[in-house]
Length: 272
Image 1 (cartoon, rainbow, N blue to C red):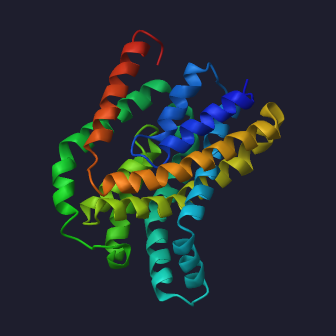
Image 2 (cartoon, one colour; image 1 turned 45 degrees about the vertical axis):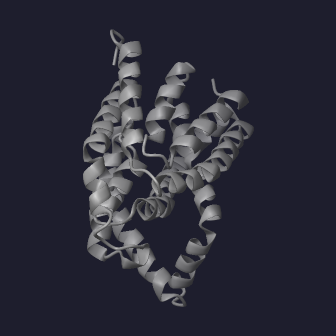
């Protein structure tokens, strides 16, 4: 059963990992297994606490968010252009996720699929790191230079993140750097893209299953997870941008590979 302390721990894991290219969903699934938490309410909780991470981005990038809102009202051309590109990047994952949502939740929200996704994503980052750094110096220097085609490429890549453990942040940052954005700018676009993408997923599950979650765990437990996630994610966002300004993705790739190896060792012989 979920209680306040377990909810806070899962919120901490969500906040630390949502915007790092190491998969928050994968870490939450592994953490829940370590805490011996299972059931539909736990799976719903793991998705609902992403709303805390959404609030963190709104706070940290409030000027960008304000520009987007002004763009909706037709009072900011730059904000309107960024909004259009975020919508283009969001649509592919919404379509694929809407079609496969229940199947993904039933078949991939488990430890072994996460281990494989961690390993695959880690290999991509380690092997492609030098190429990505070179590509990131050849394209638009800022989000204002991002084209609709670039946005579509990032959106198509984001569909891979529907595999828990692959990491939405990883595939969108990698895709952003692949189309030429510098690492910090690719990360910022990934953060902003989380608003519609995570927002849609969170609202979908909240609408479908939140009543069952609150009845089983209690409103206080849910709010504890949300608050912890928001506070920790706000600190993580700034730290990642500073890191990417000096380094590439290779450290995160090695982390994923080591974690996948450790999980394989712990889970070997167990039922997938």
